[in-house]
Length: 86
Image (cartoon, rainbow, N blue to C red):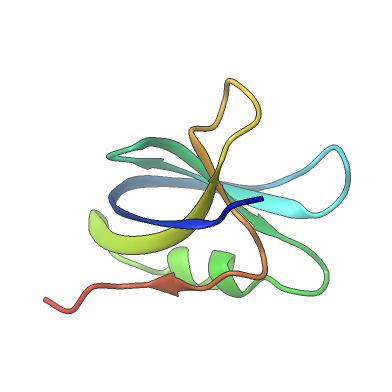
């Protein structure tokens, strides 16, 4: 699956949710639509980076297109988020 960087503004962050197939995810409302940031027992790195940030904030997220109608993009657990310097 192709992972591409997307520059976006995070506008709102929801609670951590449990995924049907195991693992967890954090939903964020962004300037590009709803993004799901995936986590697992192995890695909650990206979820932990996003949760404490003050809103709104800009970020570069390495994403794949969402495969359901609920999410424009997914951020896989083994990718990293980058925050642009202000």
